[in-house]
Length: 100
Image 1 (tube, helix red, strand yellow):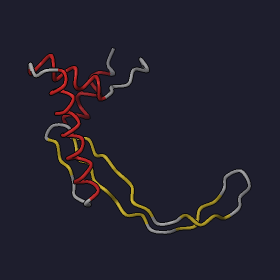
Image 2 (cartoon, rainbow, N blue to C red; image 1 turned 90 degrees about the horizontal axis):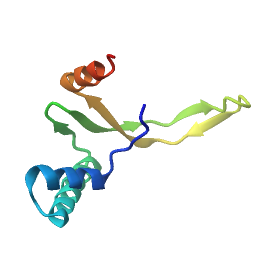
Image 3 (cartoon, rainbow, N blue to C red; image 1 turned 90 degrees about the vertical axis):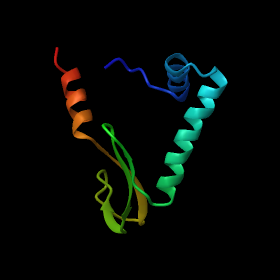
Image 4 (cartoon, rainbow, N blue to C red; image 1 turned 135 degrees about the vertical axis):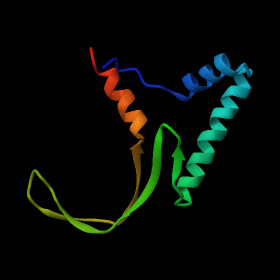
């Protein structure tokens, strides 16, 4: 693993180079897209990006967990969690990147 992280700045720089918008417009476009995705997820909607994957929010119910160190039972509160399911194309692309 290279340890590199793709950031918002990297995305806006890619939009700047590929699309030809100004750096400021590219940054605003990336922020707008991420904001639309976030807002949809907050509303409980699924976000499907073709050839990439699906983001969705799941409600997890309350349950009893266990502290692995002490064995003590601990109540875990109900919560909403974000899940991502990659598309088959994305899975294949990532898998082919692992072949040396």
